[in-house]
Length: 353
Image (tube, rainbow, N blue to C red; front, side, top):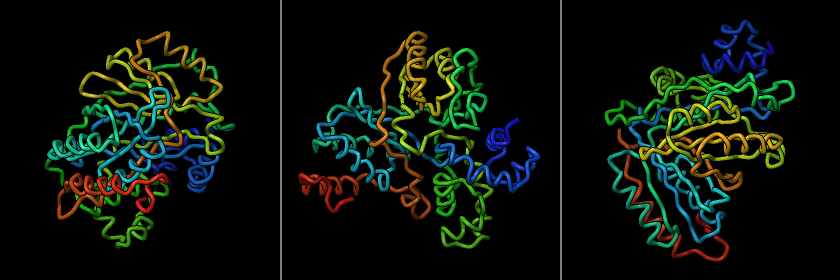
């Protein structure tokens, strides 16, 4: 078996520590280190950590909205929210001409959050919108059997060989008595940005705390990571090689099983109103066969291409955790938005971001 494939499969089982992967595969640590630090990036592959937001006392909400402003303008506004207002992810859907945004919010601030979104409409920044609670959101395991680790491309015979990923849906319920610390949240944020190399002394140096402090918090924090997985995104001219697609359909078991059988599917989420979303990064060579298979096999609500330019994924906002609790960031955030609206000009958010 290809050593790169073995390392990727072991990483998804035991995590990204070089010694653990070497022990699980029999591959020398030096080779594991080379594969993770050099080989995977050359193939357009990166490691991602999936955080259990519910265990942190956070509830994720999906917001779909339209705006009369250009996507570039709203994207810069959302980037600001990704730093100060619990925004976890957003992207612009090019066919429907709307944004979707996912916030991870303490549930006791739900009313403030909904009022905040309503004020965005009152200020004229967004038009029609919908808010739904997410039951879960997570990245999917990488299907190594369909990827050519020598050439860095997906194999094109996947339609005949496809099989479902056996993944149980796990609801992410917020724990309102979560035992978390500021340092622990800072560690999680660093692991979201880059889980490799997973060395405590490097994390300590980056956070400017002692290694002993990191070690004290790490074992508890490690339990808050649901999984590690791999994401494919070609780094050279991605728009010529891959097409990011979002599929929205009904939350029915047979539909989910079908979508999970597509190897390019990399993330899924489900709302409490019976909608199922799945995100795919499809190689351009296979775009026709993929869309053909989807449209012939399931009842779609929507299928759209999301923007590579107007998208953002943010690390855990530990700056919003103060004095042992999550703060209500929406009042201050609204004041900032009013300031932005009052000072907006033809060049966008000059001086704001």
